[in-house]
Image (cartoon, rainbow, N blue to C red):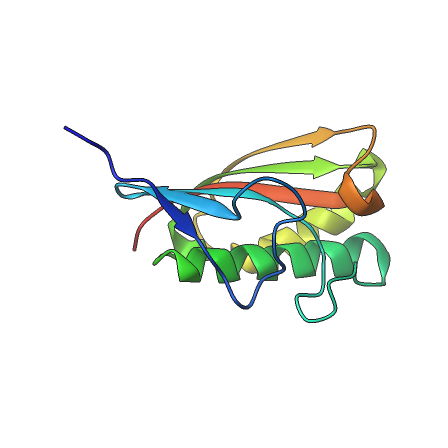
Length: 129
């Protein structure tokens, strides 16, 4: 049996900055690529540090999920990549506001560098709504 694979397009999220898809839907699963705190209209990183970047990255993630027929409520796993884990409490506070009830499983790791010199990047796996 052939499994369908659909590339997700989201007009309200920044386009991919490399040779990858914003997300892929396969059956009832959505695999969302790492999202940055980029302003979708300007194509530039938002100003304001970890707080602003985390908020924008999650808003971008939400737009890709919506384009794929899902929502933040249906996210089952995220991975958060951070430039500096000392900023974890700030990121965590913003993140908690997007997942107020029954948050998804999550891993958070510090990395040496992110695209566009971002402070945070967030990827997700979700189920179709």
